[in-house]
Amino acid sequence: MVAHPDDMEFGAAAAIARWTGQGKHIVYCMVTSGEAGIDALPPDQCRIVREGEQIESARLVGVEAVEFLGLPDGVLEYGVDLRRAITAAVRAHRPDIVITNNFRATWGGRNLNQADHIAVGQATLDAVRDAGNRWVFAEQLVDGVEPWGGVREGWAAGSPDAAHGVDTSDSFDRGVASLEAHSAYIDGLGWDDFDPEEFLQSIARPTGGRLGAKYGAAFEVFPMGWGS
Ligand SMILES: [Zn+2]
Image 1 (cartoon, helix red, strand yellow):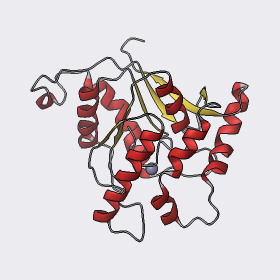
Image 2: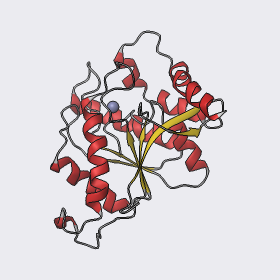
Image 3: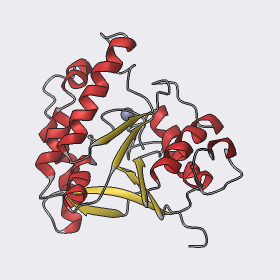
């Protein structure tokens, strides 16, 4: 559950590839379609491009289901409306683990995080609890939808407070391919000489080093079960 197409690919997708390779079932939910992400492309056209890139990017790491919640890119607000939308997705998919993006104020040091990421990460952990309470967003509990309190942990990818690492040495290349799939977005950033492989290596090497592996992905893990 992340704010934008590309959020998983800037560091976490190699871990996803490892897990799908182990047979784990993973669904991607994008709160927005990243339609405000390309300066030269109006949102109605950008939405189509970015949804297509995300679907291909997900396929490259073994994720066949990508859901777009359709909230507005760039202006997400933490609050009840965001929690409601995420709760509906949690109740629909009934996951054991929910992964989101870093929602701390920075990426470490002074590199500021982005407002949508902060709103979505916090709302996701709250929505995991909302999903288990039948009296919260009770209007969703129709047509066979039931509360879901089975999420054991929430994982925030790339958090500066991460204390858990996943060895991604064997799936690193698939993570690179999944970031390269966002070619229209990357071109639109206008970053001269941006190389997805080099960029991901620069993140994955230090984490891998701490694991005694070549590459790794870092997560801040929150236990979500009541009473645990
Ligand atoms: Zn993002």
